[in-house]
Length: 341
Image (cartoon, rainbow, N blue to C red; front, side, top):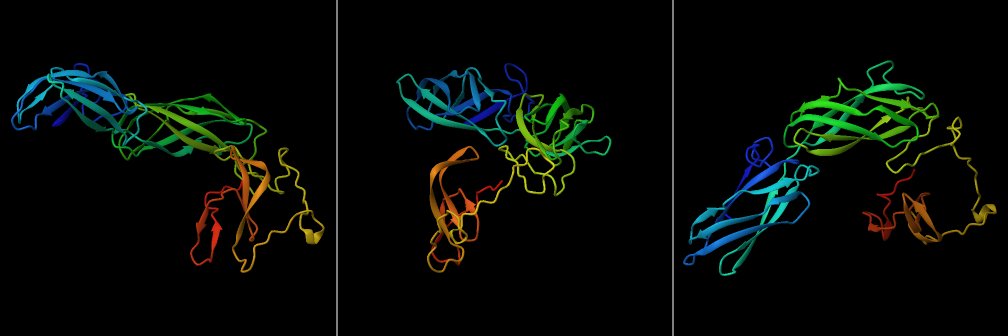
């Protein structure tokens, strides 16, 4: 293949914004220019069949005739090839296609075509409750405004969105928003179409409500952007959570909440009459850790663990990947990816 022309101007069978760049939701007419790089042999009755390699494009018209191509000459197909760009493709993705080229002598050539995809990319930069004390309190119904910023590669026109929620303490009363035009590196909000939410009276201060903003542009590009709203104003007497998995964290000061577990000290030190087994860290014990096999599986963040790392400094972790540590003799175990709820 010698060159490629992308047509997304909305004429013929194409649809798009006419910038000649592949974007999610567009239908592209492709002008594929083939060149015969040979020096003495013509390629006659050349045909092309386009095959899809990944999920970022759909082949709508993938067969074409390029006729006879003499040595050193180039020729477009008789009709444009037609592909649709996946509406869920992200900025920076590639639509990867394979061109299978055949002539009348059954000579076959393969060429890989990679088309960069440019798209808007949204992040939620703020969530504002413009009424009352600007806080979502337990038992209240409130309207909120979402501000989004386009950090993608192209402008976004006619942006609309739906908000979804999965939470035991809140429900949405209205869930659709309109943001209009959002230029590159600019922001917009749904000030004229606020989202309405009702918070259960049993929810606690600081509870984070996880939501997703499902956006769609006028061209059909779609994305899902997570964001959160916190209930009330958190104090030291409130639990925290949930995290992305759903865990909450309570301590002994959160006694006003029925879900707070009852804490009980269980003595395991043999020196104090406990039933535990003292671990042997050997000599030079500063910053050492041991791998301890469990007699049962410990389920944590949805994954079952059969062993733990126990540090002499007092922490326990499920991350059992060994790593070298600078300025420390021997090997200890990483706790870099561990989460302690």
